[in-house]
Amino acid sequence: MNKKLLKIVSVAMLTTVIVSSLAGCGSSKESADSTSDSSVAVDAPYKKQVEIKIPIYDRGIQGQAPVDNNYWTKYINDTFGKKYNVKVTYVTIPRTTDVDKFNMLLASGDAPDIIFSYDYTTASSFYTRGAFQEVTKSELDKYAPNLEKTLGADVLKYGVFDGKQMLIPAKRPLVGGISNVIRQDWLDKLGLKVPTNRDEYYAVLKAFKEKDPGKVGANNVIPQGLSSMSAAGSANMNYAFRPANVSAEEFAMYSDVVIPSLSWKPTEDTLKWDNKLFNEGLISPEFVLDKDGTKLQADISNGKVGVFLMPLKTPPVLQTLVKNVPTAKFTVLPASALLPKGQAPQAFAYAPYGMLSGINKKCKHPDAVLKYMDWMSKSENLFVLQNGVAGKNYNLKGGLPVEVANYAGEDKLNFSSNKDMWGLVTEQKEFGSVDENLKMDATAKGAPGFEKLYIDGYKETLIGAKPNFMFNKPVTSLTKNSKTLGSKWEEASAKIVMGKVSEFDALYAKYSKDYLTSGYQEVINERKSIYEGMKK
Image (tube, rainbow, N blue to C red):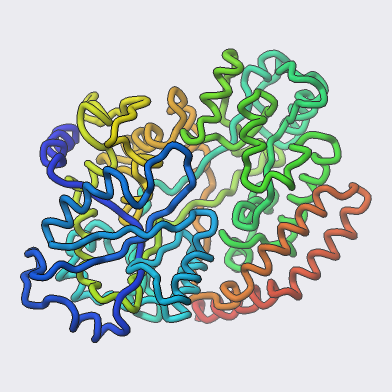
């Protein structure tokens, strides 16, 4: 495997990779094909330069070069672009408002040639509006054979609607998530063990609050960190409160990555637990105001929080924390810590796809878009974009690229090792095995010096994990109602969690009823209908 990587490195300096998604081309498949230079061989440059517009996330990271104009966007034009006589223009998409931005661009007719989303429901909504053109098997065979082989049928099937390939999903080699971590130094000071069930966990939170092991002040200590309960961020919050015998139908009806199941008993029990913790001062007191999580990040960095979702490399939360509190130590919180004693964990696992990309129905050069994706899927190109320039961005160690810390040259990699460029074809770096993939993923995403913590946390999230049920057609009522339900969830969850314990039942009944009548019952009914049809 290391020899293979070394071979890739030697070739990799010639090319690179990029990624984004689909957007603005011709008015139909026929008109799109007619505008392509069909006289040119598949791997030859176009006689007349063509332009493709590729979206790229703008995450608003301070100090980073413009995402649509930097060393790596120029590199792609100098490699892929010159090879095929294609001008690649990048269209910035704000990460926090990406759906609104795409909707605006589609409405104005200015959408890029790729339209993408990590969210299946959002991608489905674009499909139901007629935003995409079909990608036929013959087109994949002709213009993107390497991409087709790399993704394989098991990944490509997630982009099939009504029997047609309407989306090209990126593959996701690693399907686990990010775990919670607990301040081990706080446990050590109090002579406590890492909690392994809900009763032990509650006792630990109480001890953190009452004894303030971090010496930050009784009014400042936050046993468990929490930020604003967004709909997407809360959709999978109830796994610890699901009964061990959830039926396959219930799992399909209520498991989601878009909107929480407010009317389902496990969600009620989760909110009751959070309500208890809030009223006892055991979670972030101002969580409802922390819309973007920056308050929680600051509290963690300043050593005030005992349990929190593991921070990644950027922003440097863990790095700042250990500077402020050099004695701080961390341990992964076991998956069982929120469960009744003896109950086996259940957890959400990602499906084996990442970014979902569709080619804009108005795209004039879908063949060029497919060539672009195919080029980026080739290992020698992907390696360069993911790792950069040898001796600058990385050095080889044991045959694997190791990032040079704090490198600040012009060719510095953008966010998460240029992830927003190559995420069109894969969700993570790949190095020949799951263990090597995870090791390098930890290097790319984990806080420096805490790679083992990242790996341990990832493995913990796999315990009892499985992906959500895959319906064979878009759930149109979810597309129609998700924005309304998302807003209602944020209001309801805040009011319920922050309410008095004695008012919980009344508040939950009130908001649950409103949630159902605002579209959630319609979602449940449609899911049930599709589910039953699939079981016939």
